[in-house]
Image 1 (cartoon, rainbow, N blue to C red):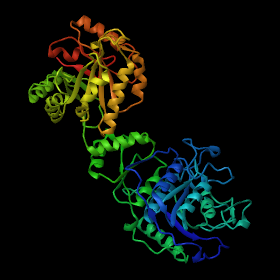
Image 2: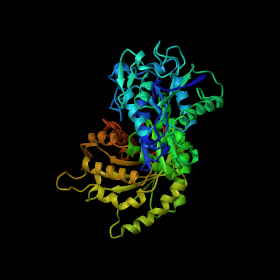
Image 3: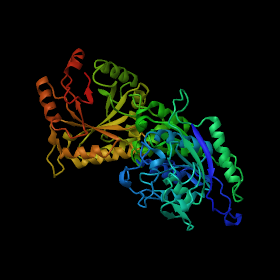
Image 4: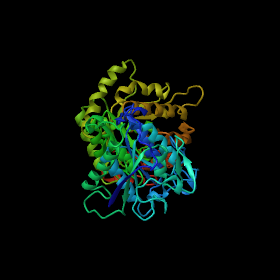
Length: 578
C-alpha cells in the first residue's frame, strides 16, 4: 500500500547543535473543561486542532487536499468561509497539495495520514482549502518540526513535478521554473507540491509516504498502515532524526500524552487529520451521531462514565461553544428525561392535575392510567405528566411551599414521569411568580405553566392580558436555570383561550429560535363543551409562531374517546388527560 523514502535537500548543510535546543514533544490539555473545534474546512480544522493541543513536536504529518474529495477549493477558495488561523488560501502559484490528494486517491491519503500521525504521535496538517502552504509552514515552525512526513498518492507524477527528481527526493532549485523563498532565504521550488513546499519553507527534512488507491481490507480499518508499514515509517523517521545532532532524545510516549481528555466526534470526510491529531496526543475519542449528544443515550452514558478533565468537540455539527459546553455538562450529570434521552421530542405529554397534599404514589398511578388512553398517539413515547399548582400561597413562606411539592416531584421522576409547575399570573409580574420556584426548576424533568388570563390589570394593559415581554422574561430565566445547572431542556406552557391574551405573541418565534434549552407551548385551555372547546382550539392554534408548539386541553370526555378527539393539525405536544 505504501512506500517510504527519506530525502533532504542536496545542498542542505548539517545543522549546528548550537543553533537551538532539541525539540521534544509537548502536548497540553485544553485550558477550559470544554473545547469546540468547529471549523467546517478540513485544513482549518486540522490546523486549529494542532494549535490547540500541540506545543512542540519534532515530527508532523502533512498532506494536501483541503476538501473532502482530496482536492482544493476552486480558484484558491475557502470552503466554509473565514480566514484560517496561521495561513490563508494560496495566491503564490503553489499547487497547495491539489496533486497530493486527487479525488480518486483522496480517501486513501487521508486514511494513511491519520494512521501515520497516530503511529508517530505527531500532529497531522493539511495544505489546501482555507490553509496555504505558508500557513502550514508557520505551524511547522511554531512546533519546531525537524521531520515532515509528506503523504501523497503513489500515482505517477503525483506530488513531484515531472523531471524534478525521483519519488521522495527534495527537488533542487535549479530544476524548477520559478521559486518561492523560505524563511532563511533559501529557494523553495514552486514545482513542489503544497505539502512539500510547507516542509521546505520550514526547513524540515522530508520522509515521503506514497499511498496506493484505497484497498479493500476486509475487517481492517480502510487505509490504515499495516503493522509492518507503521514500523517501517517509524524507522525512517527515527533514522532522519538520528542523523541530526540537535535531534531530541527519545521520549516515553506515556509521558507526553494527554490524560483524561475525551474527544467527541461526528466523523465526516476530511476530518481524519484533526481526529488523528487528538488520538496521537492521547485523547480518547467517541463518535456522537450527528453531533447530537442529547439524542444519544450511549453518548450520554459514555460522557457520564468518563468524567473527563476536558472534553473536545470536533466539527461543526456540535453547535456553538456555549451550546456544546451545556450539552456536555448535562451529559456528565447523566439525567435522562422520560423519553430515554435528554431531548423532549419526539413525544406526546398527557397531563394529570394534582394537588401537593395528595399521596405521591397515588398521583403517579393516576397519571400513568391517564396516559394509557393515548398509547400509540403520534411519534415517540406518550409521557405521563403531573401538573401541580405551585404559585405562592397567601401567608405561607416559599420554603414551606417548596418542601410540600418536593416529594411529589421526586415520585414523578422515580416513575419516569414529567412535572409541570402551574403558576397563576395574579397581580405580579410572571417572572416574580416563577423565581421562587428555582430550587424545583433546577431538577431535571420539571417545567412551568403560565396563565396570562389570570392577570389583574397592571394599569397599562387591560385585565386578562400580559405583554409578550413578560413571557419572554420567564423563558430567558428558565433557559438560564437549565444551562447553568446542566439540565436537559424543559418546557414553558402558556395557557390561552384567545391569542390576544399574550400581546405580541408572534415575537415568540424569535424567542423559540434563540434557544434549544426551552420548548414553548401555547395551550388551548379546557373550556367546557365540545363546541366551545373546538372554537378555542381553532383560535389559539391559528397562526402559531414558528418553532412554538401547541397544547390541547379539550372538553371533559370518556377515556375511550380520548385519542379520537385529539386534533392532528397541528398535533399538540401537550394533551390534557381525562
